[in-house]
Length: 136
Image (cartoon, rainbow, N blue to C red; front, top):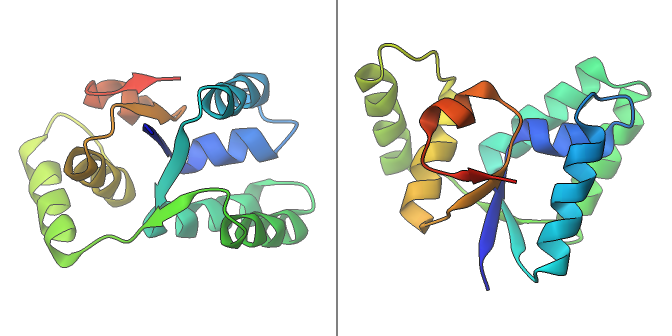
């Protein structure tokens, strides 16, 4: 079974009806389900998603809590970042001086590489800049 990485922007767009990328996110999540793939996110992405929902979504507190509950019920597999992942992410940020990757994005890229994931649901320009993934 193939795995598809989900970034915080992907979760946000899927959950927040008013988001400009909502329809694209719904189609991407539906595609993952139809193809029998599974979703993966890092614990760092979950932290970021929760904060994003709290700060930007209408009824943010309730929606953020429902998001965390859905993760606990199996929405996605949570891949915990390791110390080595953290070091590799810092190395990536230092190496890619022409990019403004966030630490969370850099961690995502490192974990994606470690797990051999080739597809992602992300609407962040940094995922396009990274260029090693097929974005759904």
